[in-house]
Image 1 (cartoon, one colour):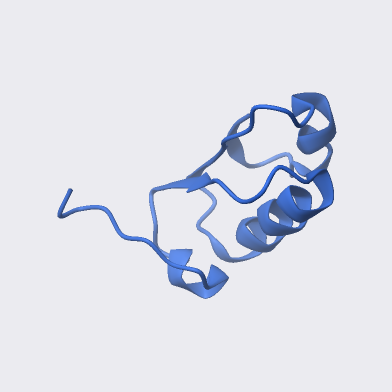
Image 2 (cartoon, rainbow, N blue to C red):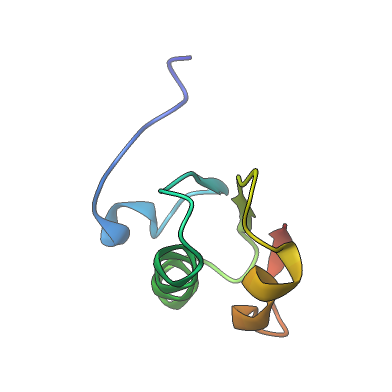
Length: 71
């Protein structure tokens, strides 16, 4: 657990290896967060999302071609 960190600011994730997005179950909110994170994190970082009700296909529309994403 000591290697985990949490933040509410996008810039804090710039050097992270693995990011899990877990905001509210709203497709627009999730897409905005994913797009914002994609703009600041390293190209080799993995960006994952957690959802139980939002369409994975819809969330995947944001994905840039170079990103390792777990949807």
